[in-house]
Length: 130
Image (cartoon, rainbow, N blue to C red; front, side, top):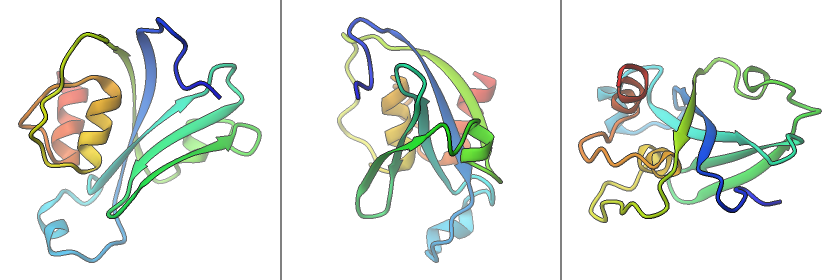
């Protein structure tokens, strides 16, 4: 399955925000429904969901059938979902110094270069309010 067709600069992604089940001290300072985020997009042809989810110790990239989950809401229940149309510039450079977390993965797939956005709630505000 090809994730992106050559020359496909406009991409629609769903950024999913949700609470986490992990017990870590840092989550005490994060907004309750904005403790984790990940990215989902439709595959070319629209048969699958492609999920890019940064875990605490590995990257989870998987596909789910749209027959099992026909809508993004059925795939991601009890989540805050923003649908974003991103224009990807293949010549743009990303910052190499960053906190590598779930937010940085979502910023990468969207082509966002906002250095000071590093919590899920900051990303939500950046995407929702500019």
